[in-house]
Length: 356
Image (cartoon, rainbow, N blue to C red; front, side, top):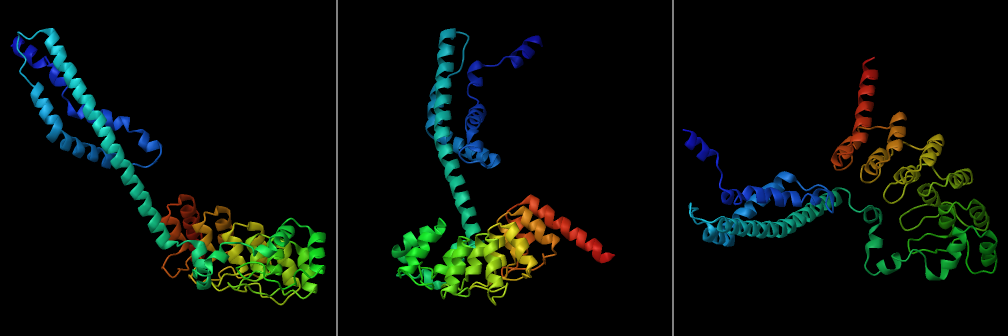
């Protein structure tokens, strides 16, 4: 009885070294860096299944043949040295398996992760097509025009625009007085003129000067953007105020994509500009040609503070865009837990107030 028990408890060191599972675990542990760098979300279960499948393929071919050659029965006459040699051979075989697995599975895992990220990227692009592409009219997509559009300023006006950007008032006026350009001069391939550029960089003094010299505050570029749109895009509150006080431009004037100055301010995260526009009567629920309100865009670009501000001003959070999505749907689609919580809490608060 004792002999049987002793026999059952004894283990063959040679057999211990043939544990394919330990090799898989070792190889899998060696690949733990995949979870951290360079790809951060390799699914461990799928990776494990890939290991097991690949191990079987390898084992069924070259390794199985080598293993069969070494699996001779152990006898009492075997020397300790002979046993150690077989164990060493198995260790070498295990190491060969581990390296093969590492090479093959690492390559597979990296390739799968790249494909996954590429797939996610394509899905994201399908829902949110490149914003520049969606906002540009078809005119800008023309291949003949594209080389000019790629240049932000016509070459002849580079120094002028640079001087406006750097707020070199005297230099700009001196160039103007010499007749180098007029107040309605188009300086960019987008159709922006001097008034647009001054508004964009918040140069109120220059804007006022050129306005008095014949420049138009209501001039449009090829996307129907007025100087006030560019000012809102860059958060130039003083410039917006000047334009509103010196023109009959409506606060909710729209572009070719039905964007208002309010849309531009929200889309670029300028809370102070948003507050100012609301104080001037900007429509908070205006909808662009994609059916989206400012809330949709604030959620899309993760402007938490702006989302909270818009909800406090009772923006309609139930409006659906042309793809049938509310702002909450967008937050869920990008798994933004903070914004999901903020919008859902707002919904609950609104529901309670309605019951009262």
